[in-house]
Image 1: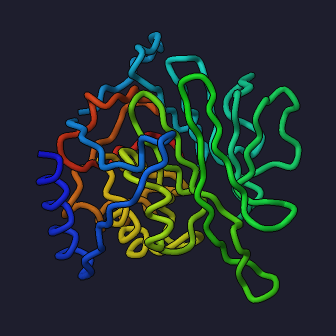
Image 2: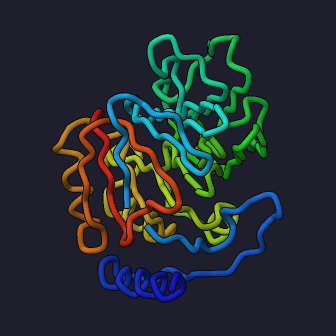
Length: 273
């Protein structure tokens, strides 16, 4: 059944984008579950105002704002993405990830109490490489390039797509992505269930380009970030509407599990910019 759904998804993508994106089978490292096609079946459970304890195969996702999400595992690991110094009042995450496009996506002065600071670029040159197992969470990255105002206009490996594997799910945070993904990068990423995607249409990629990236990745759930108001979010959603249903969550927090993924591809909007 999962295979049929994937074929249907890609066939529809041809009609929307005009490009059939190849679906290759990539060899998977034993440590990663994301590098195999997911067999999930789907539905979203909104979080209540009072946060309940997570069950073993659940995670909690909270949109803090801009490109920062707080990801919490049932084992108690807390991760803040594109961390620029704040992830909630008084909160010290166990792990923070950063990207190098602008200083709203990183800080040079992370709280020293944060145990793991994962920069999506390598300050010493080359690319950043992570494969970090913490309790019930695996964190890894796939480097991408970003535009730059110096040199030839490109900062090689200035961004990382961070992949978080927990609760039987694979979540990809695209960071400040500036280009479509190569076959090699797609192979390194693997099959994602949830994609956290910048939807600004200007500073990262235009909406058409970002829609192509989403079709490359074929997730069940897309959560927009890095949008500034409804005028930037609406055209992004319009690009995906032929293939994705749209759900607006009443609160910025949602509890996810493999059993509650949406039956059909869905855009889930968490309040906040």
